[in-house]
Amino acid sequence: MLPPMSVLTSALLIFGLRMANITLDTLRLMLVVQRRRALSALVGFFQALIFVLALGTVLQNLDSPWNILGYAGGYAAGILAGMALEERLAIGFSHVRIVSTEHGSQLATALRTAGYGVTELLGHGKDGRVRVVICGARRQDLQRVEGIATEIDARCFITVEDVRPLRRGYWRGV
Image: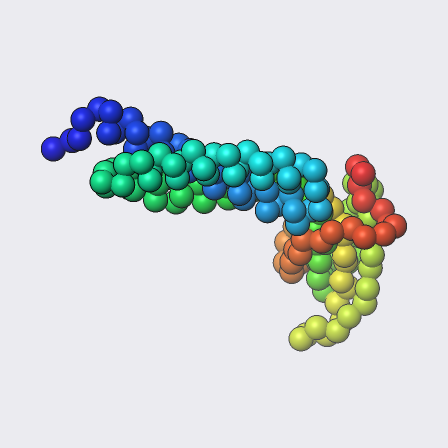
């Protein structure tokens, strides 16, 4: 049997508030890592405001398991929504490391032609000599960089690590 509409409305309100709170938490953490101080503080302000409203509503009606379920469900949904938002915004920069046995110079040239900063290194892998191409790129550009690399060398090995530029160098579009 379903509870009265006012109980469901309250539970849905709590769910929505908690979902927004956790989504903002993910965004705030992203901004903190990128050292965007003012924006992360602003997001934190709204996050705290929403948290107080959601928790206050739950504490006023602790006898309702629906409110508690709405709170927990909003938390879980907020995690998923925050991850999706983080992936979509792709704020920041990455170093893409591409290892190629035969086409390293071509990869480097193609990436430079596309406007990316590239560093080439010689290395020795399991099966002999390799060329390591390190490319600095915005996180938003990772699919483009991967596409260029795999078009030239479908067997290349690609890794990515997020970085925070500290000083100098070339970053496309910055």
